[in-house]
Length: 293
Picture 1 (cartoon, helix red, strand yellow):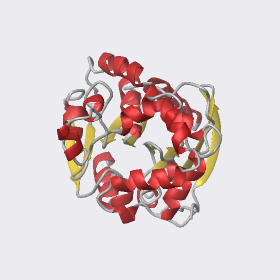
Picture 2: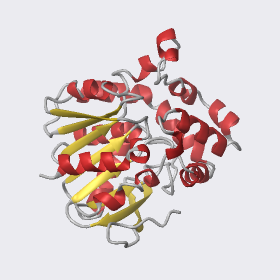
Picture 3: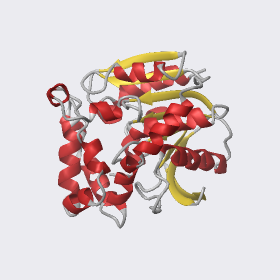
């Protein structure tokens, strides 16, 4: 099921590169100027597999596995937004590209924001999907409150994953059941979370260090808050597309980006949190329209 092809039926190309002290796995497909896609938690490049064949007609699509995820290596540290941003910029440079279009979802959107904020000269346009930045709402949405519990978007896991060792203790050996249950609960269309996706998340998170790497992203929250606060003092210079889902984070995505940019376009999809799986055609069409110039 992982034999994904581009728009012409050619298999995506898998590669590895050692950059910024970590060996990253990535896939690349298509032709034209580069478009970098950054996945969220607990996903891998495979999160984008339904839209890569659509986007590859217009762009050279580069979809890395973030450090610690997928088939990238799992170092003991470096899971903060700034270090992951450094990784991805170095990877894209290693592939021969100095400037690129950039799209991220969930934690991938946070990493993409970090890239745009730290390396604004490299990012032509930014698409930011379905994420709250640390320091700008992520913690508040994870609080135990009546309002959050009654909502469609109670981010209880932010606190749970932050705790040292306990998530690993409880989830080890149950990766498939846990990720399938959690991810389907965040969707509007649970059928979009197909067995191939669940198998990929379970395969990679159950590998040595897989769960630890995922949770280290959350354990860097306080450094991320400091960095986000500093970066937000300077508005992003590039156009930003904020993409929200009607049944999860929604218009708060727009609010997030309007705090850091004066050039924000907002679109909303009629789905839950996993937009590229629930509404791949709609998402791809919005990205193509936004990135076309």
